[in-house]
Amino acid sequence: MNRRLRENLEGYLYLLPALVILLVFRIIPILFSVRISLYDWTMAGPRKFLGFNNYLQVLSDPMFWRSLLNTFWYVIFTVPAMLFLSLFIAVLLNQKIRALGFYRTLYYLPVVTSIVAVSIVWKWLYNPERGLLNYLLSLFNISPIRWLEDPRGIFTILLSPLKINLPDWLSGPSVALCAIIIMSIWKGLGYNIVIFLAGLQNIPVQYYEAAKIDGAGSFRLFRHITWPLLSPTTFYILIMSTIVSFEAFAQVWIMTGPPPGGPLGTTKVVMYYFYEQSFELWRLGYGASIAFIAFLIILILTIIQRQVLERRVQYA
Image (cartoon, rainbow, N blue to C red):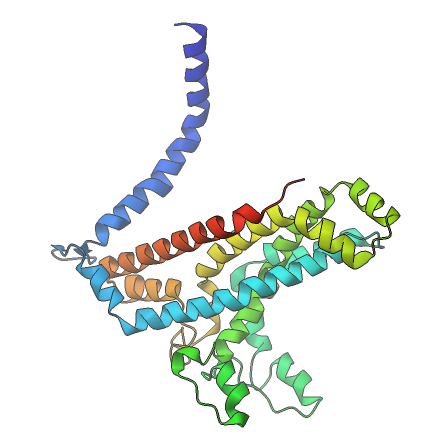
């Protein structure tokens, strides 16, 4: 055995454990779920081959489209807000201030906290009778809000004084879904802050020094140096935040209901609808079809983001 072949073999042997884990826990389950989606698959009894009938049934299911609309509202409100807030806080934390390590740790703590624990705490905060948020509102003589129980869309609420009636699909996320969005932004903010901080600290200081000599102020420094050179970091966070937002499940399951996904299905996102069909109604083939369609939607959105935005990314 020659030296080059031996080195290649050793390299593949080092990769083998990771490849086995990837194959067993990722690739095989994905292929198996695709197979399940083609059957009337249940936990017991005969399994009838349906071809693409499950997919056709999903695409004609009003509740699937409602859950998809809820998911899009969740993504549209969560991703931009998280992007803006995390960048703003990261810029502040990048300054030379006292107890900087403490503040960075404080913002990152929600990220490492269990989503179950966070959801339970926020459900208590949203409690209409004993919750802290309604108590704070009462100090300003504001009527209590039924945060997780109000199915009205926020656009409908805002436009009601103008007597404007919106169709259901344009009424916006419900008050209950907005409550979940607020919690989700708070939970995921710290991770994006850390990534933005890493990007900020990789920008050469010489650029700022040269611009200051030319008389550039803080806004121009951010506009012409910080923002362009943060575009690779922003691009990464945008794609990852979009993918993670489409996978929202635990907060809906814990904070809403009974049954979860309420009120009136206004917080039932795609991943919860997949869980409901697969593991509550045991329609495993139908649930696998939902999951695969959601995967295709995420894939298409990711490709569009790359095609449209990647060309605008600037590297130092």
